[in-house]
Length: 417
Ligand code: GDP
Image (cartoon, rainbow, N blue to C red; front, side):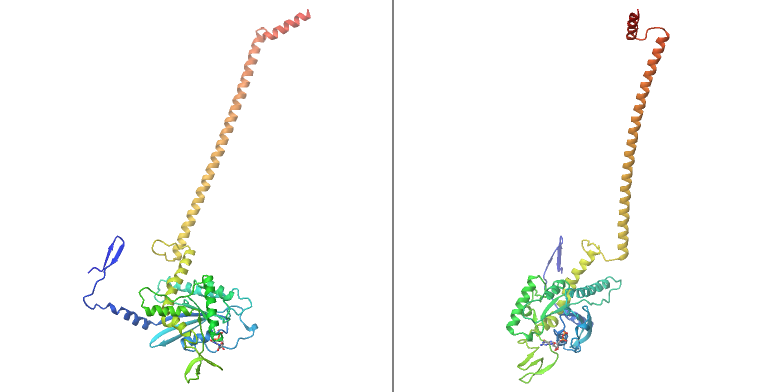
């Protein structure tokens, strides 16, 4: 039985019918048992101005009092000057499945007179969590990696009914490549149904206009119709208009529900007719928690990691990244430095030699010139000496010096007589 055939790098799959039960159909159960034993880790971040109902919604989502009731907002003088990052962890269990939930709160976001840089500490916090994961991955022993990365960020939009504020856009633009963004219209019970619909449209068009990527429930080709319909239903509710309440109230028809009681009636948190809370919980917890974790690991973290390693000068070879090794990096830098020094030395030597050659050529030229002048002068002197010798000899032998000179003498003699 040859299940696959490889031909020149191409592989084709041959479907085979089994003659009997082998057992690998049980693989999903193995994974299930293992995951249940190990438990799950999930980190959610909540961002939004104070008083938008972040703590209440987290308590409502996980049906626990993770956040104790808050004190009313203190006067401006008491407020912190920067965005703080606080996290609360809790182990919760449902039907024997353990979930270690961490909620990262960002008190102070959007609460200042100038909120221009409110996003900065949050981006830094998300990146430092990536950093910590990368550092753990590079340890010699990496069997016990603690995953503190933020898997989802619930962004609370004020229920103004207008459109997104500059602060909202700036935050989402800065964060959408680093975290799964889930926009939420806070306290949606303060808006009418039509207002919610219109507000959602404007928010979505703002998000599209600024090319912001928000988390979308993924659908796969081989999925059944029911799952696809569920994903579409969830996607149709984004941004989720939610109502939070961790209190039980009595409805006029005698039921006890989680909700908010008003003189004119009760807003039920878990009623899909009243708000999108159920769909939000479905996306965040029931159906897509694993997708959120996977997207964070496979796409967001991976992109950040690639960028980080490239910026650190780690090159990618054809198949795998070179692991970051400080000693190897140091050695690489030293070799580069040495090569640079050698190159500089060779260049200096070349320039020096060139200069020496030029000087030598110049010296040789002036030496030749001097020699030529010396020879010229010597020749002239030699000629002068020869002439004088000649004259001397002629005078001594009593012969007239030159024909011209003797005619002159004759003329002179003629004149005297
Ligand atoms: P946080 O500062 O964003 O964490 O806000 P809290 O969760 O402390 O809520 C601030 C106030 O808003 C509290 O009085 C809550 O009872 C109230 N609140 C929370 N959720 C909702 C909601 O969905 N609708 C309305 N109308 N009020 C809410």
